[in-house]
Structure formats: C-alpha cells, structure tokens
Amino acid sequence: MNSAPRRFEPPNPLVFAMLVAVAAFLITSLHGIGFSLSGFVGGLPSMGRMLGEMFPPSIERIGPVGKALLETFQMALVGTVAGVLLSLPLAVLATRHLAPHAALYYAARTLIALFRTVPDLIWALFFVVAVGLGPFAGTLAIMVDIIGFCGRFFAEAMEEADRGPQEALCALGAGRAAVIGAAVFPAALPSFVNTSLFSLEKATRSSVVLGLVGAGGIGIELQVSMDLFRYAEASAIIIAIFVLVLVVEQCSAWLRRRLI
Amino acid sequence: MSAIEVAAAAPADLAVRGLSKRFGAKVQVLSDVSLAVGKAEAVALIGANGAGKSTLLRCCLRLIEPDSGSIDLLGSNVCSLKPAALRQLRARVGFVFQRHNLVPRLPVLSNVLHGAVARRLGPRAWFHEIAPRALREEAMHCLERVGLANLASRRADQLSGGQSQRVAIARALMQRPQVMFADEPVASLDPAAGEEVMRCFLDLIRRDRLTLVFTTHDLRHALDYGDRVVGLRGGRVTIDAPAAALDVPSLRSFYE
Image (cartoon, rainbow over all chains, first blue to last red; front, side, top):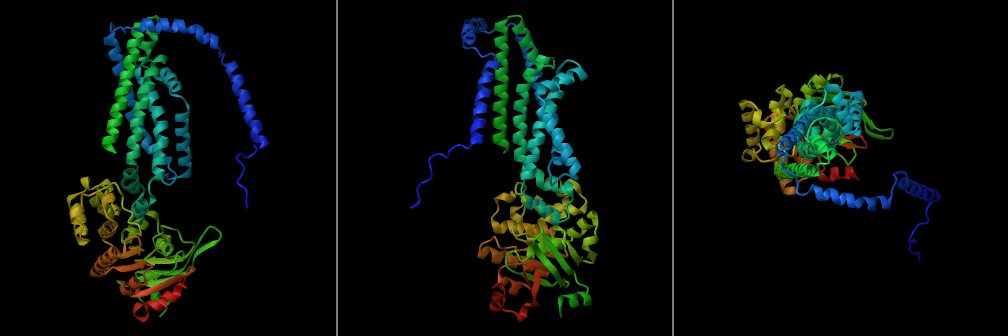
C-alpha cells in the first residue's frame, strides 16, 4: 500500500536561507525606521490634546474651505475626463493585436508604464514648475496619473475581448478602425466605464494631497491650518474631504450599477 | 473531371491550386490542396477534426496566410492583393462561423449593419442609431429574409443559438455577397434548430444563386445540401465527387 504523502515537505535549503534573510531584513528595518514603542506611548497625550482641540470643528472659514473643496473636485473631474479621453488611443496602441506596428506598441507600453510608476505628487511638482502654482498644474498631474492607470486597464480589457466578433468583422472586409469601433470598444465598454469611475475616485483622493505642493485644491488649506495649530479648522477641512470622497464614491457606485 | 481540370475549363468562382499551410515546424495542416468551385455551385467540405477544413476556408480570404499555392476568388488572385483590395474582395464573400461571432452588447440591427462595413461609410455602418435610412432599411430587409425582423432592437447576447446564427446569416446577406463560406454553421445548435437554420440558409443561397462552400460533420447535410462533396484527410483532398454519386455509408468509411 502507498503511504500518504508527508504532511510537510522539508524546506529547500535555498528557500530556507532566503526566508531567514527576509526575516533578518525585517528586523533591521524596524531599527532603520526608528521604531520606538515608548515614543508612541509618550506621544499619546499630545495626540489626545490635539484631538480635543479639533472638536468641535470650526465652521468659521466655511466659505473659503467650500470653495477649495469645489476646486478640488473640479481638478479631479477635468483631470479624469481628459485622462480617460487621451488614454483611449494610447491604450489601442498598447494592445498587441490592435497596434499597427510593434514599435508603436512598445512605445505606448513604455509611456504608460512611465506615467503609472512615477507618483502623482512628483508629476505635480513637475507641472508646478512648468505651468506655475495653482489648480491647472494639479489637473495636469491628475491627467497624467489617470493616463497611466486607464491606459493599462483599457489595454488589458481590449486584449481580453472575444476575438470571434473581431475575426468576423475582418472577414467581411472591415479595416482596423471598424474592428476597433464596432467590435472591440463595445465589448470592452463595461470595463472602460468601471475603470473610469474608479479613476474619478482615485483622482478625488489624490487631488486632496496635491495642494501640499502648491498644485491647487484643498490640501493647502489643510496644511496652513495645521501649521498654524488651528486644529478645529483642520478638523472641519478633514470632515469636508471625507464627505467629498464619500459622495464621489457613492455616486460612482450608483452610476456603475446603472450603466453596467 | 478532376478539380484542376474544372478550374482550367470553366471560369470558376473559386479556384485553389497547390495550397499548403503549416503551423509551426511540425503541423502540416494543408498539403497541396486543389479545388475548384463553379458559379452557384454548393460544395460540402468534410473531414475529421484537424483535417484542415476551417484552415482552407480561412486561407481563401487570407484570414490565415497560406504558405504556398494560389487562390483565385471571384477573378482576383487573393495572395497578391494589397490590404485595401483584399478588404473589398472579402466584402463580396459572406462568412458564417460555427459560433455566430456577433458583437454581444450591440443590438441585432447594428450587427446586421456590420455587413456593410466595407462600403466606406465609417461609423455609420457600425451603429444603427447613426446609420443612413437606406442602410437601415436594407438591414431590416436582410433580417426579414431570415425571419427575425421582430428582434431588430434586441441585444445580440439575448438571442437563442439558432436566432444568433440567423442574424449572422443576415449580416452576411447585408454584404450583398456573391460567394458564401460557412464553417460548420450549425454544429453548435441542437438538431432541430440546426436543421431549421440549415434549411433557411440554403434556401437563401439558392434563391440568390450564390456560390457556397460549407464544412460539416453531418454527412446527411453534406449530401442533401452539397452539389459536390470534397473530403479532406490529413490536409489532402481524398474525395471530390458529385453528391449524387455518394451515400452516407461510403462517406462514413472515409472517417475510419
């Protein structure tokens, strides 16, 4: 009779050595970041004090905060719409079987990867230098970030689209544009809508932070309040941001249910 | 008369000579296939799975590029056509697939319109909402011919298998084709639906006097609907005879 397999395979020496190395690095990292339990505990009273000062939130500057909040959402919306529109043609080039030439395919892939891997805050720094302080720089940063995000997912959706209808259109004399317009886009549309709505949520969150580098939006308001120790004002801003993000997420979830 | 003699004698709609196709280093799907199909003739292609039937049909429209040999389709030398001319030729040849290959999220009418996609109308041939009136009417007429005019606005992914295949036939009719290819058009339908679709299809083919090449595993269909039966085995033509001279038992032995 065959015996049952062993409960555990003995570890491969190489794998074991790598596990030990990873564990050692993790422990060194705790030291490297200056982890200190006493520091955390010691900081608790001041955290408590700060939270205490945050309540009740101050509605004194509700006007400027509301305006900044609107600007934040406008940046997110315009940046997302522009980003989605620009990523469509780029994604077509980044889809292997739709790209007219292999060189274009690799160029598009590289560009999308560059847009995606460089964080939006760095794009914001770049555009602040290029076009000056303000929401336009932030909107451009969001747009580039969204191109990186949508370009990749749009291309994946188009690569996964059923090839049958595409072959059928080829067989009846359709050119590349017709195959893409009449077969690929309709098939990938639910995925496009989904990704675009996620982009809007993502853009809303990141547009909040972009203000910290002077690229417009509500981030600058928050920073000023914190720097001046006006915690009650800061808490009002944080709540406003929270509400904005929540509203955008709820609306996009509702739209997603309606459209797909 | 052999296929090659036929090709030499009468102006055939389709004349294939010495066609070979190999996938990778080892898989020789077609070797030296010759075949001629006259105007308004119906040819049934039979053969086991992997015998090269589908590849042969696809090579004729260069959906798969053949390795060697020549293909003469509707007076054009298929292998030497430039992309634009190839598209214009493809537009004159209907192709019905085993899987209907409709665009699932679009309405039936838009799918039928796609048959006109080579007429340089741009997006107006992609979506019925923006199509010119005459084109919509032509598409409705094609749907009427397959008996589905009442489903024009239904989404293609909400049709039954038989209905989908009829819509695919309507799309092919929209091409105003002269030749029709069908690759196991009813293989994924149940026998009753398959019979119905096949009868509707052949009725239209005969009425329009279209040249037809279809592949099938149903020997009854091959004999009933084909004027001639061509058998492929291991990528070579091993039978080429009038359907009247054949019967099911003799064809069955061909599979063994």
